[in-house]
Length: 175
Image 1: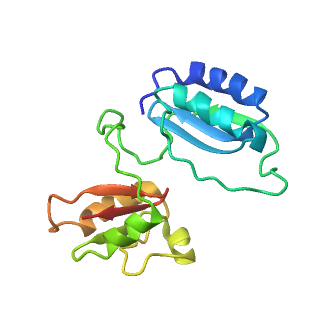
Image 2: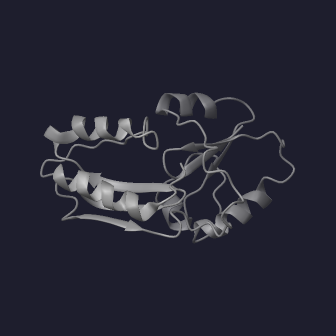
């Protein structure tokens, strides 16, 4: 996703989502959006339809959870940031539209069962201590910025045709 004017988009989204009664914490940058939010159940279909009308957001995968009180957030906050992911990479050195295929749990399990599959857990040290995929490469770092260099080093000598796919928010699978 490429957002040419995050400030303008921020204002547009705030007006629309506030009118729906949405609450949450959303970050916008030129490379995309990161959103954790609550949308009232009776407004969810309208919310989804509005997103799908915008080519930038059409087909964005959702992770939906239902809450009894629906109050994970107290207000709607949309902030513009220089970058969504603190990766340390200079702008222009990667293509934000070149993304992996979102895998369902079944697709992920099928992929990791294939011989030669390498799973790289891209969560930081603390997160991977909480839980990890069996046999996954887990970089021992505190930040995502440090992970890129370490994973690159760990994968040296592996098949150069490895394909990096995003799995959920934090994990990557290479084959």
